[in-house]
Image 1 (cartoon, one colour):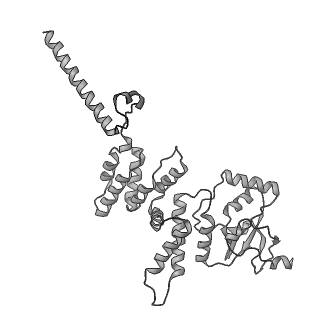
Image 2 (cartoon, one colour; image 1 turned 180 degrees about the vertical axis):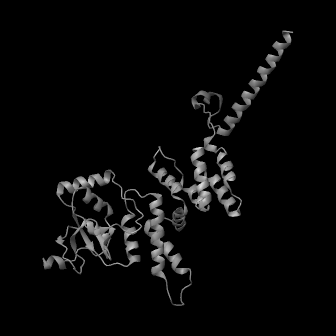
Image 3 (cartoon, rainbow, N blue to C red; image 1 turned 135 degrees about the vertical axis):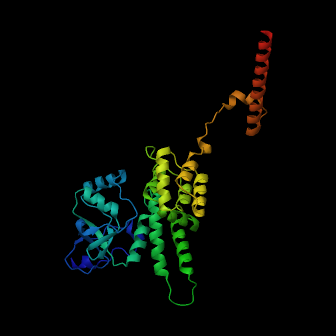
Length: 328
């Protein structure tokens, strides 16, 4: 038992995945933990505070539940840290849910001492590689991560400019997640949206046709609207059953910056017909191809058809006038 307690199991978060299972021992009261795998009652583990990633009971979770029930245990340990009221989950929220659904009362964990900022960075790093990460999850996760890095990067000497830690942190987050610094900033802007609008951005990724959806770029522009005006916009979107285009969102952003955007202005902008909402009339190409040379530009074809229709309309009017004159 003592040998099992002293065994070093995992040194970094990256080592967590794919390692051979380490010995699992019970947790004695008052134990000072080394880097070893122990079996901990699930009731002692609380979720990470303000956890930005949703823990969904989806098909992936249910598959994990079946695997746990078949094996009678879960092989990959979670990572937790000691907190005053017990232990806080750092990596393993889905595994914790699956274990509970499978009827287990305990699960293997690694107990690791971490500061608040270290815990945030470790939590986001472990969860950002999920199968599907929603825009809202990225938004709050990147914001938490960046704030933690900035706090860690603060310097009290006079050798660095005040903005250096923030710029360095932006670049570090961008490099870790494989996105540009500008895109990281756009995601963090989404945290300024009210929940009803932010949910629409997630719906677009989930492709839930039963719920209103909003594209990413218009949502970023709308994040600059004050909360009161966002609420007015949400009411307008619900009443008109439509979401703004990027052009409409940028117009509202500009008017809000000028202090001239109100409910009437939002309503008028939303009533404008978007280009993709205009009714389109299409003719199969094979029906008109014989009238044009190959590779004729689309615009020239359209102009020619419109002109032919205008001439046809003119001739019909002339014929009608002649028939009217002959009948007198």
